[in-house]
Image (cartoon, rainbow, N blue to C red):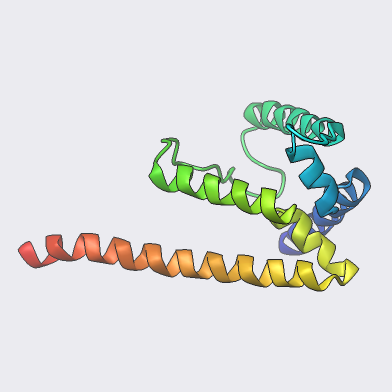
Length: 153
């Protein structure tokens, strides 16, 4: 029963998130690019969307800190890595460049698949391919770093 509730909550959360993206204009690449073009024809309206998202997140985090565990789980699953390192900085830069060029980031891209734009589908496919390549590359890099230590012992 709990598993079904978790799926239901995830589905409703995803639908509300997608609806919010649609209403706010975050699924419109030209509007996103206009927001990012601070030196040109800047459209500041998405700043309110981002500010609202930060506010909701801050409220949710404050509530979460008071609870011993989530309603439908035994513990919160928070990131354990807190250090700003090279992969984080490089990944953030790649994300930012991709967002600026395409006018889409992962959430709005996936949500806008329902609109049937071929360019969005190409973006999502290449985004997934990039994730897979990065995952395989990092797995190999971790293996090559730990290999000498294994042979030395």
